[in-house]
Image 1 (tube, rainbow, N blue to C red):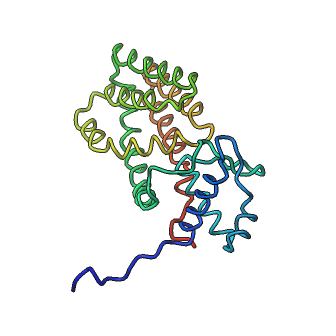
Image 2 (image 1 turned 180 degrees about the vertical axis):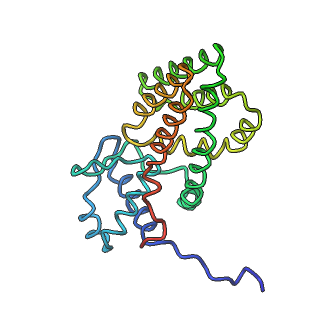
Length: 235
């Protein structure tokens, strides 16, 4: 049977709400730091449930376009609510992220353990250089993405395991997604830097158990992202 006459996909209600909120922000000329109307007001004006509005706001949060402050409303963190990532791509990322995080924990805790056993002075210099770069990025108002990437690459190199390095390389795109997702969480970059420093110290001290535990704690923090609290199928 031809696919041309297969059932047409209907946009979820929260996706329709999302487009209306984007349009409102543009028409109202909202910019960075401006506050969106409260969820209750948006629901009343749009004639939808607060659950649908909440879902739309979560999507904007996940896309890094707004910040919701506990008890203080939702504020733009950019001058527009236009997104470069379609909702369906977010849905796909939401589905695969748990597997990526599981794989990262399994591989990178072992890499940290091996790094503490095998690191060289050159490896330590690479770790320190990555930490300095991340600190510099944070001081300049960035999220420390490149410093974070270099740090984890330096840990992988310090483990001196060609096969584990191949596994990490095969996951590079998915790891980049999880890194970006984590570092866009409010307050996350400084916390990530602190955890990197703890990992580096354990590797420097040749303490495999501590290095592995510090990496596990870090990766479980990485897993604390808004995206995973979102159920795309709701409303």
